[in-house]
Length: 335
Image (cartoon, rainbow, N blue to C red; front, side, top):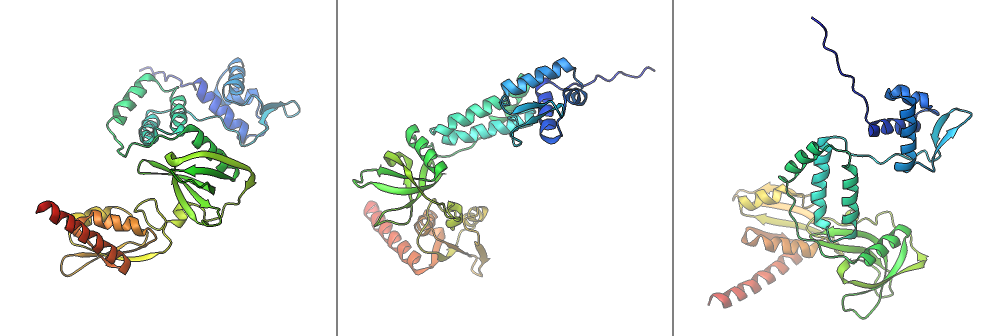
């Protein structure tokens, strides 16, 4: 019985260029002959690939030929050609990311991100694209619609942060001008905020400014600042109750009386040190530390009668005050 002839698999154009790029960055002056041997392509084909590498993949000014070594090299060793999606699984993952990006669709970076996704998937076959679309439509990300961000405000903030320049701006209806060090842009619950350190005689602390409220923004290009090592929001915030950093760290103790509420709460990481202890009466005590005082108060109130604060005293007093006021309003409605 004759042996079945195995069809030889050749690299496509993009795969060859990927291989050539890898060889240039990892080998000592590889030659056209080296490329042809490794990719099993002809010399004319390799020459076309090198031309495409220069003209289509951004290597025109950095891909050079050394006549002494008789091989190619990059004048910028860190250069790599842009990656593309090469499998159905990759494009499915990318489509899911594109769906997630819709949560920030009203920002300048959304358009840029979608353009990147589109360019990455250009080389995927139509059948794979169709299969990926079918699956990605079955997975949904929900969230509040993002607020509309002014392109000029966003661009100026990006520029100021990239160079650590101070900025000046007006905020909401305040008459005063704010002078701040722009530290980070933070997205939370549909809102983009500027996380900044205020550099004014009467305000020298970190604060949040919602981007839609910022206007008349100017970059102070003559003055720069040095970022502190712990500038990042996640290094300063203690808790995941909302975008907030308070002045004090609280040790909280809560009583949870509903099993259903407990199951929901235990699902999430509200604080790094959160702990749960079952009680003899069937309730559960939750303890944690946080510097998000008012968000914790709102979070406790959102669970109604099923979560009761026991410590600290401030949280207990504020909770009682809110409950009494809600009871007073309820009595007025129900009478």
